[in-house]
Length: 171
Image (cartoon, rainbow, N blue to C red; front, side):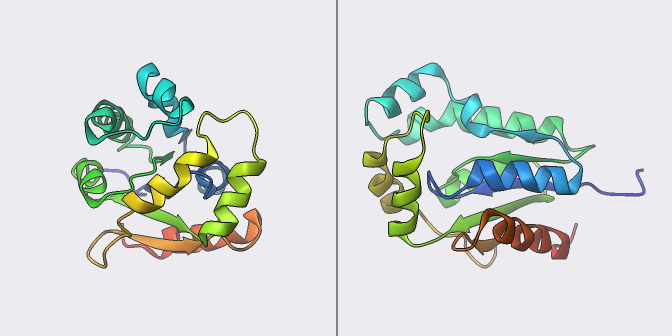
């Protein structure tokens, strides 16, 4: 039995909320592996999103299974992975991997996130799909293992808040 239990964090939120930026920084601070959840999408999902078509629950199922598989593969050494996990049932699917799965939900005003998504380059998610993400979003409930962190500050400020939330969580 290891002396130290490494965190297993899923950074959630709508597109443009800073999941990748905060996830990478958080993993570095915690000294655990990082995975970009977007890289686990099947090619068909990427094509749909690039075309401005929102994903269905059926589209997301294989992706969520890949994210869950990554979590299962990191139970012993911990890790940070990004996944929008907009709906409770998606988070429940991921939480079924282990009671240690901690959801760090990044949130902020729609106008701020829209400005960020419009300014970024080279991402498959068009700004036109942001509204559908906010419409689908079911904010984390008090009984879910996790915390909400505002993205209204700088990336460094948000990372500090995220790190504090993860460190304050029971293992």
